[in-house]
Length: 92
Image (cartoon, rainbow, N blue to C red; front, side, top):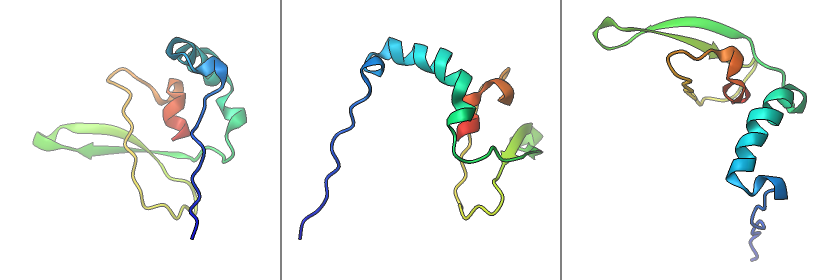
């Protein structure tokens, strides 16, 4: 019985350098990510969660319609962040 082994991934030449990769994602991918996604962006619902010692945590829930997925991803973007400028979290 033979098993398939995928070839190792090789990034495009312009993404093999850490600095170039950072610049690419900061300046290129952040501007055209919407045109490269397959599925439409889900709608967001605001929620307030009460944590330890009654500390409230504001979060935004995005669940696609008819999603069979039972996984939860919690993405944080800092105390002063905003979902509008955190495109990478929106892709998740």
